[in-house]
Image: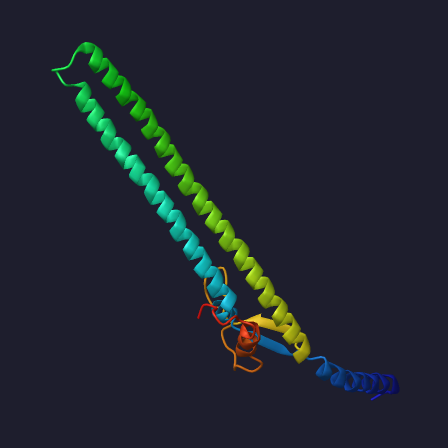
Amino acid sequence: MNMPSLKALLAAALLAGSLLPAMAQSSPRIGIVDLRKVFDGYYKTKDADAKIKEEAASLEKTAKGMLEDYKKANEDYKQLMEAASDSAISAEEKQKRRKSAEDKLLEIRQLEQQVQQYQRQSEASLLEKRRRMREQILKEIRETVVTKAKAAGFSLVIDTAADSVNQTPIVLYTNGDNDMTEDLLKQLNANAPAGAAK
């Protein structure tokens, strides 16, 4: 072996020898978390769900009242039409009753529009509230994950509950090392009020 190739080989060996410890030190520590379990188990998620259900029930009650008014107006309209077709009354009275029936029909159409508009608005309002609550809860969870991950020296935290766009699991295997799920739940629920949803 000639001298230049021996020097090159020796230099490569020295370089590799100096890089190996640096590579070993910089190997990433990866944490895992079942975000779905943390989200579902967080007391604020349960409280938010309870509030949304309560509001949905209140909106449903109002909608039922509006539908009852709509049904009642339809019944009144039928009665007015029957009364207007009574052969025992004068032409003038028939005209009055038809006019009342027409007015009632206009009222029915307005009620129908009001019911439809109310249902659309209440659904949109509930969806928006649910979206905002979800975003706020996820923000709090994420902040806690970041704090705990930094404290544990993790360079990356992976959600083991995440699915791909094909609705298949992203994480196919984990041995469970560095699982932060239970610690996160304990920390997030540590300040839960006594009456928090279980």
